[in-house]
Length: 80
Image (cartoon, rainbow, N blue to C red; front, top):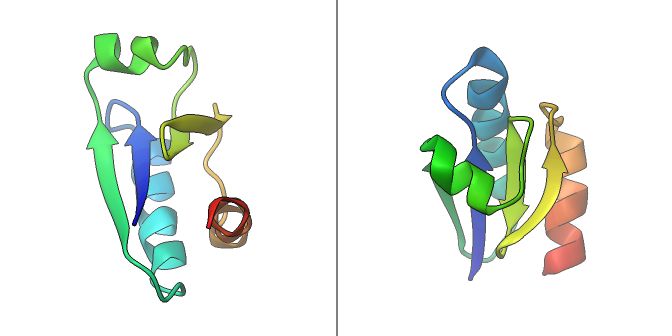
């Protein structure tokens, strides 16, 4: 199983990143758990200064931008 976290406080970019991550996860044939982290202290624990951020298996792979579905699929593929 893979864990993906969306770090963000609920801004439109954060919501778009979550939606794109959920869409990307649907195209894989293994279980992907998607969660959200919105507490600013928890976000800072990841060393993230700009949201939204994408975390896969506890590794920050992107911050400060909303990725496309295709970009997220590429990151998931690197971790599977």
